Length: 392
Image (cartoon, rainbow, N blue to C red; front, side, top):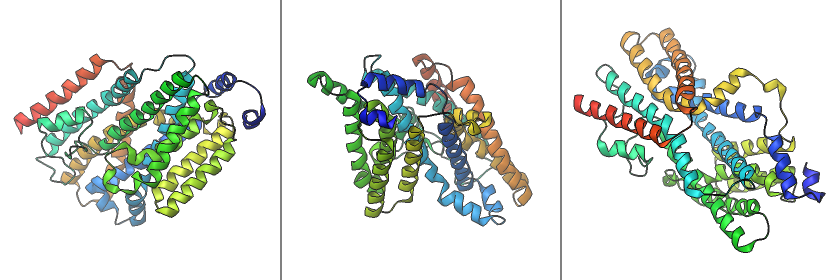
């Protein structure tokens, strides 16, 4: 495929058609990355927020250190993979449909927020339920109306308001990153309409590359900027570039693209060392290898549990904190000093999180998102919060 991109006179349409066929099958690599990242992040939060982990840490301190200090870097995997899938989704549709920015943004908002509102409703209810019996720093304060509204519009971190659950910041960042990427795509479409020459996907690739470099060398250096998508665009943009490479028909091989990514990542890390950046670069290089392999299936990774964990990873990510709160409260009240009970409690928290996540994925996340469903679940969140405020 790389030789074809460099030398063949075949049209861009042919390349896109072939790339679309190559990606019509399910990707075991993407499933594995999402599943591993999901597991690491859930366990990071279990160790960070649950008092059960403090008891267990006396047995396995090195594991606790790893989960506390390094497991959160798995967020970089989600960022790169998210950019990669977003680029492929948009690029594969370019020849087939007109581009409308705001409908895409609204649809993305629906997809993100419907399961989010479900998880937040559960989090608010469980926090209120366990508060009288479980005095712990991981509990959020009773909700107020402005806080609920901020969560509905994904503004809680920008407004410096306490989140109802762990990891909710990522949902807002994901939406911001998607909006930035699609704004670039919209500009590329407008430029294409004016110039009438070249490839719209290549123009979008150029915009994404510029923003990626700005993030890696400027925006990502300010820790106070982590409430904005621009801070994370370096990792997300690497995924965008790898995902759009084949469709853009750029006359370099994917191996050369991988070498360029490694070079840029090394330079950015030398300029300001960041371990999370190297995780993002490593993920992008793995996706480059996958593209070099023409996205062929990998039979040894075709495990049902990986696919199901990947599918439900977002729902698991959203619900696991509430599950952890409930299990932690039970263990804390009955077996606070029992190491075996706390080990079992951590395992039960993880297992229940996966089970609840799969349930939410199938019942809530899989059905087509609509404004009716979105408003219903937003109303559920407001009603739950109102009940807690009145009863609290």
